[in-house]
Each structure stands twice: as structure tokens, then as C-alpha cells.
Image (cartoon, rainbow, N blue to C red; front, side):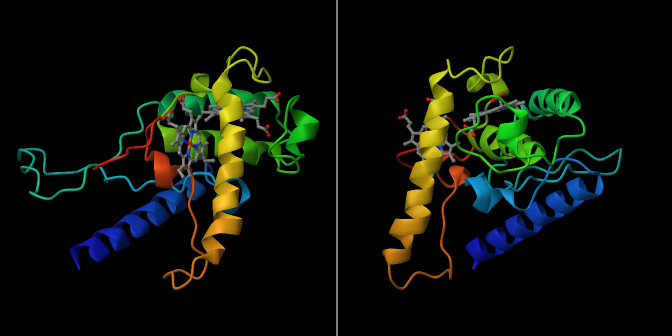
Length: 192
Ligand code: HEC
Ligand code: HEC
């Protein structure tokens, strides 16, 4: 019961966050999950707003730990800098705007940047520099960049070939994405 309730709340909060960002005209894009197995928005605990005089209440016994996306602000500002450089071409296919697009061909350039930031960066809890030489975005010198392309292919194989063969699952279209495994860290956990 409790798990179901937490899941419902998490889904609602992810939705609310996405709506808020859409309203603010910032970073979300509903196409990104299916398009590139990008990480689904991770639910955030809303900032508590207690009356000014009261001390914050003690944590509840079985509170789920909230994910802190440490590098969010840095990634946003780097993404915005690139968005500025490509101004007017956000809707053009990425391979016509950027130099070294192998995976996300055909996707609008602006959306590619959002996947990088909100999907991959957030999903793994990393800065842009984890995968990039940030002075030379097209460079493949960092192995994490090619690993990411391979991880995306793996995710697609799981979603398109393996999961559909498993009978009696609960979802009509069961799927995994970067967040399913990574959950905000570079190395997925192997035990609880
Ligand atoms: C988890 C790894 C990862 C992270 C984090 C990441 N990127 Fe990328 N980035 C890639 C991959 C992989 C590609 C190539 C995509 C392809 O082959 O279609 C790429 C391509 C790019 C390109 C196109 C470069 C060119 O000319 O070909 C830009 C620009 C870019 N990223 C910017 C960013 C920014 C800005 C951030 C941080 C907000 C970021 N990336 C975070 C993996 C990452
Ligand atoms: C089925 C689970 C799974 C999924 C889904 C998955 N990964 Fe991974 N990922 C792993 C495992 C396991 C490793 C290897 C960790 C290790 O080095 O032991 C890894 C490693 C990586 C690394 C290397 C990190 C480093 O610096 O060492 C990157 C980058 C990465 N994944 C990106 C992604 C991205 C982006 C996605 C979504 C497109 C994704 N992964 C989806 C399981 C997964």
C-alpha cells in the first residue's frame, strides 16, 4: 500500500515539476524518453516552507531519500551557452547543427541538448564534463561519450527486443531507461 502511495506521489511530483518547467519555458521535452531512453524526471522533494519561526520537523521514520542533482545549475548554464550559440537552429536536425552526431540523428538540436542535460546528466548525476571535453563538444576523447551511445543501444535492445518477449508483465509497454539502472550515480548498485 505504502509503496503504491509513494509511487503515486512521485509520479505526481515529476509531472508537477515538468509542468512548472514547461511554463517557465525551460528544460523539458516529452519526446525525450522514447527518443533516446533518456532518464525520466526524478521526483524531487519540494522545498519545505515552514513558518519563519518554527524549526523544521524531524525526518519521518521511513522517509525515502531525495535525489540531489548536484550539478544541475552548472549543466543548465552550459546548455544555455550552447543554445545561445545555435540560436535560430534549435529545431534543425542535430547532425546539421553539430559536427559528430551518430546516435541522435534526425532529432532537433535543442532537444538533443535537453536529453544530454535532463536525461543523461541528471540520470547519472554528472556534469557535462563527465562525457565531454567542454572546450570541444564534438570530440570523442572521453570514453564515456561512446559508452553512452552503447548504453543507449543496450537500452533499446532491452526495450524493443527483450521485454516484449516476457509474458504477464504489468505494463502494456514495460520499459527501462538510464535512471532505472543509474538512479543518479555512475555505477549502478548491485545490492540494497
Ligand atoms: C552521459 C554522457 C553525456 C553528458 C553528461 C553530456 N553529453 Fe553531450 N554528448 C554525449 C554524446 C554521446 C554525444 C553524441 C551524440 C550522438 O552521437 O548523436 C554528445 C554530443 C554533444 C554535442 C554535439 C557536439 C558536436 O558538435 O557533435 C554537444 C554540443 C553537447 N553534447 C553538449 C553537452 C552539454 C552542454 C552537456 C551538459 C548539459 C552535455 N553535452 C552532457 C554525451 C553526453
Ligand atoms: C540495465 C542497466 C543499465 C541501463 C538501462 C543503463 N546503464 Fe549505463 N551502466 C550500467 C552498468 C552496469 C555500467 C557499468 C558500471 C561499471 O563500470 O561497473 C554502466 C556504465 C555507464 C557509463 C560509464 C560511467 C563511468 O564513467 O564509468 C555511462 C556513461 C553510462 N552507463 C551511461 C548510460 C546512459 C546514458 C544510459 C541511458 C541511455 C544508461 N547508461 C543506461 C547499467 C545500465
